[in-house]
Image 1 (cartoon, rainbow, N blue to C red):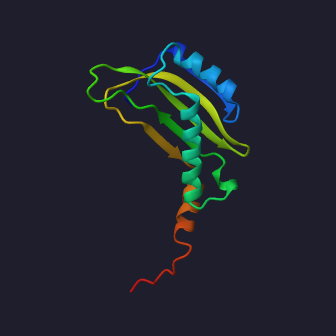
Image 2 (cartoon, helix red, strand yellow):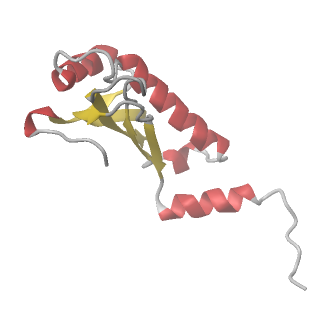
Length: 143
């Protein structure tokens, strides 16, 4: 991974996405004075919504969405910018009550670096997604 952190910038939490004030305070402690390429409350909410939309698009009912994990890193500055900047790497976990911000750290992101957005599910849920993706098709027998 193309980021570095220090122990001072590694922060663990378990904050409900709906608790905007608490997330904002948490991100402020993680990001420090950096405010351009770091995650803000809007980025966290948007990431949770995008992750939920992906799970819904996969045809998963709510009970199968629990345990999904999103790992994301903010994008870097424009490619023409010559220096690395501060960004934020964060983790969200889907629980029964919804998404929770569980971890964030201030990281180094580089010019032109794209946003990282990795959604993970358990092997059982992956099998359920596969099963649901072909459920409406009639499967031919091999010749």
